[in-house]
Image (cartoon, rainbow over all chains, first blue to last red):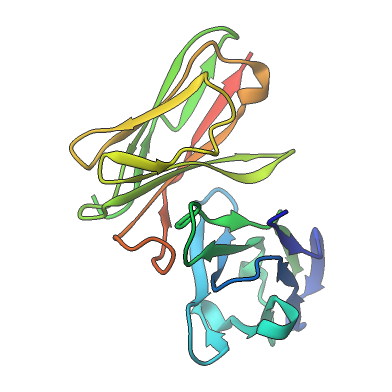
Length: 116
Length: 115
């Protein structure tokens, strides 16, 4: 079955700690990869994306992610988190071809709580 | 408007009633998507429009769910004979053409509660 897996359901960190959220997908073909963030009471916003090229992509607010094709992974990282990073983070994938072209497949989300 | 607009923001209905949810995409975006976000199922795809046609409606959970898009702009998601399991946040997104490699921008959602 086609799926996107996020390994951590809830991560709790102190400010200035480093963050890594895992994401794996199960599709064999060409994929496009996204991380979305949902701050409390707000709508889903794009954090960063990978379509092609340099597998290390940088997004907003100091976030970055690395695409490792051999591991089917797209992990999200931030060297030093802030209280304002408290939010739910979703990894998502679209396929480049096929009948489900355009559909975003989401992971179940990771709730990040940062203590000041 | 600047972003994807959804209405109403909240809807409470009784089991068995029909509901209509509206989505107004970003101006110029030809692709429109509906998703559902619930505690038990996470974020699920429902249907995708390219212009006024729906190439992929395979995510609709039952024949009680339908959607249309007119004029290549506003879309309406209709749920007939609502059930308690339909309670969720219904999200709409839009993107420029060429799905897959385009960013989907999301609205704030409609929170549907079926009593």
